[in-house]
Amino acid sequence: MKLLSARSFFTRLFGLLGRPRLDAHTGLYLPGCRSIHTFGMAYTIDVLFVDRYGHVLRRIDALPPWRVAICVRANGVVELPAGYCATNADYAIDVAHAVREATSTIS
Image 1 (cartoon, helix red, strand yellow):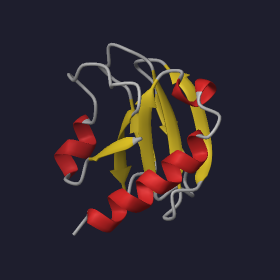
Image 2 (cartoon, helix red, strand yellow; image 1 turned 30 degrees about the vertical axis):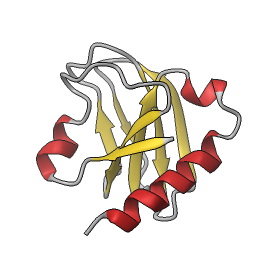
Image 3 (spheres, one colour; image 1 turned 90 degrees about the vertical axis):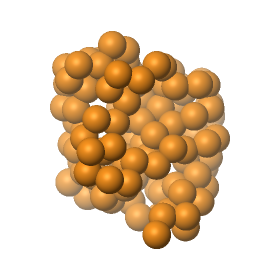
């Protein structure tokens, strides 16, 4: 799994808005976020709220456009293609590893 990192305020604010659907094993990591919105999105996404170690705290499958999702305990959010979690049994392990890797590269 490959995670793109949204590090600045504006990249976190806009996230996947206006971008094409993610590839099958690619996601967007939003460090420091506890909530996301899908306002203006054209497709559904899987959403994982994670702690600072990348452990999944909350999973939302196929979050449709024009919604808000929150997890106050989260330290970050991972946005994935819709259906990713349901079709990949090891998604939690893959996400934790990818988050730790992405976090180690953030300066």
